[in-house]
Each structure stands twice: as structure tokens, then as C-alpha cells.
Figure 1 (cartoon, helix red, strand yellow):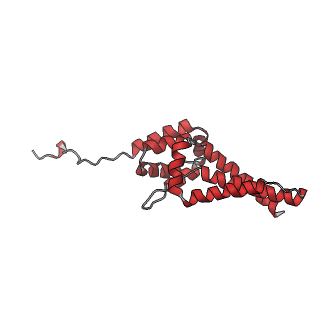
Figure 2: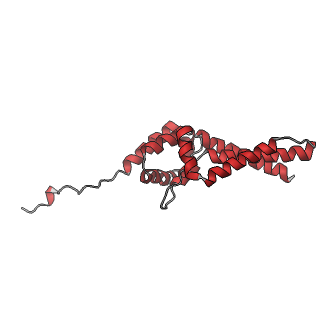
Figure 3: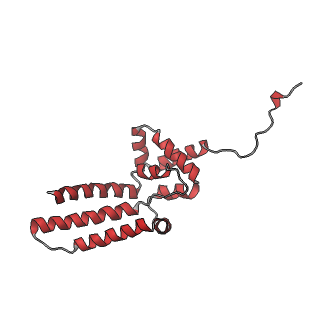
Length: 173
């Protein structure tokens, strides 16, 4: 019974991770951008996919052993996938560089990561938190609409480093 519950939980989280990987769910990525700290930890969508696919394989192996009394090699493959995910989490920054060079999904993430700095990404993340739930659903389903909204947020956070010009109307006559 426990293996069956774990199997369904693993399938649910694998489906969620695949939605993030395909760019149809943006909340976890934007939540990772809102963190403060000395260094930025980019969200790598491939790592949760590896973890939950390994868990699905392990729980499926446990179900096959318990119900059908069938020994399958899928449990070994699940363990190898989980070991690869553990290495990815252990060497996070190296894996992030490799991931962003080779894997181009989700495309909206790579597009925003290439043309924004950390400050702008953090502002996008905090503006995302202020959106109503139905508008978040709209932007989750349409990456084009989300990128247009993100452009508006980027334009609203531009700040000038130069000194302000002299104000003419405050001069004494």
C-alpha cells in the first residue's frame, strides 16, 4: 500500500517537473529568482525531472516485486538516475553551466536569462507574486504573453546612475 501511494506521489511530481521543464509552469523558476544572497542559484529544470523519474522507477520496481513477484531491472536504472541527480545537486554550478549550454528548455527561461541581470530577474519574480491567480494561469500557458509582460516589468525597473539634470524652473530671478 505504501509503495502504491509513493508511486502516485512520484508520478504527480514528475508531471509537475515536466510541466516546468516544458515551460508551462513558471512559479518555481521565478521563486528561485526572488532569493537574496551573495550568489545566485539558477533553477535547473532537469534536476527535478531526474529525481522524480528515478523515484517513479524505484516505486514501480517495488510495486512489480510486491504484486506480480516479478524482478525487473528498472529499479537499478532508477537508482542510476537518482545517482546522476545527486551528482547534479552536488556540483550545482558546473551542472548549471552544462545545462544552460546544451538544453534549451524552457525557452522563455533561456531568453530572459540571456538578456536580464540579477536585479531585473528579481524584480520580475516579485512582480509575479503580485499578479492575481488567473493572470498567472494565463501567463503560464502563453510564453509569448509572459515575455511581453516581463519586458514591461524590465522597462519599469530601469534606473539611472547619472546625476539628475538641473531644474530650470527652480532658478531664482
